[in-house]
Image (cartoon, rainbow, N blue to C red; front, top):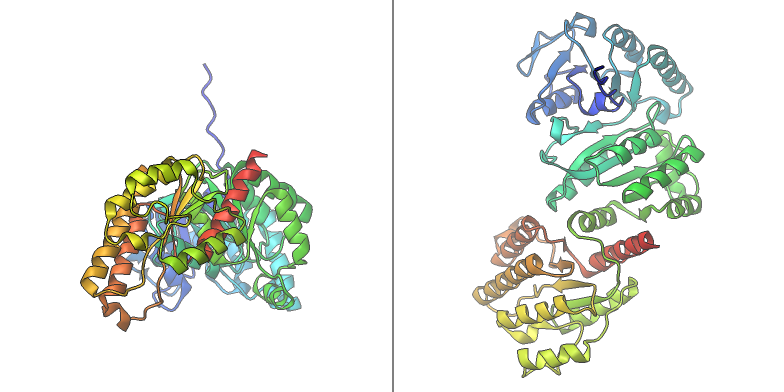
Length: 483
């Protein structure tokens, strides 16, 4: 019986999961990115072989250093290039001799400068790479992040893998988003910053992530595209398979100019982008904060197909504003039904006819059992699709009593989240304390409770506007999938 031929490795797997990596332009100077990329491979426990390349060094960070690629006796699958642009053509000659599959060009100062000689050199680099069959990521980018393989382009990025795939034209924005998501307990399957997209572009990356079994949703940042027709086809296919959340950079005149100098991208007009993304089934957000908020819901909650909100928590004024904000975000806040009120008579006989939706829990005092009971009623009710739980973070009491109440409230949220029969999100609002303010028990407690919610997997938002905006988009996405 004939043996099955091994599956051919996808070209991007040579970058995300290489058996060996050479850092060309490696350095022992901490201000150099040749130092940072090498240190990331060590810090994130990359299991393959690492080759620092620098003709002026014998060793760097405890690893033997090589004067060039051709002096390396073993295979070199992936190259991270930190050389000046003028040296890339000769590097590609060495890469061809070593049968390198993919080169990440961290190198910048090429077409994004707008200078004719830099644009010409970039095209020479592309031509030579194609002659050798070498694929390029970049130039002018941070490259790849694959925590499961121990490859990173930044410090303090989560080492645990997750299910978000990141396709970002900007490297700094990619680092920022991963770090912000990491603080909320969100993790990534793989991420790529692709810069000028000289060779491998947004379409190649979207095609890869839509087929990647470990990627369940895709977050993307585009400044421009190389092939509009192919892009529309590809992103439509990706959005049909997995949720795709996108930010378009370069929406106004100044943004368009900035995009051109950042990644040499032709940004295009915003109305065309907006229409194209909407028709493709992509969720477009305006900024990275909105993207983080929406990713949190996709990461932590099941689909929500209805827009009826039960709002519980906070004081009277916060409840009123919360209801207004929810309706303005396209959600409904239905009043308590006759059936619910009948059940409230037994649970809270002294206040059953006082309560409404939103439910102001400040009138309960420290009666945690009543809070649990009302939550269970809302969770069981077919008249609501999800629950928003606001916390009472104002402090009209002494520290000991306030601390007891806020801890009790958050403990109740965690218990409710675990036994809820419908999705729950929490709004844990407050001020923006500085370092000296963190000495106050109020801010220490709020930070501790936030960490508890995140650790338990509860979606947590800083403000009600952020929460309802994200939920509105989330609900509309799943309603669209039903259609």
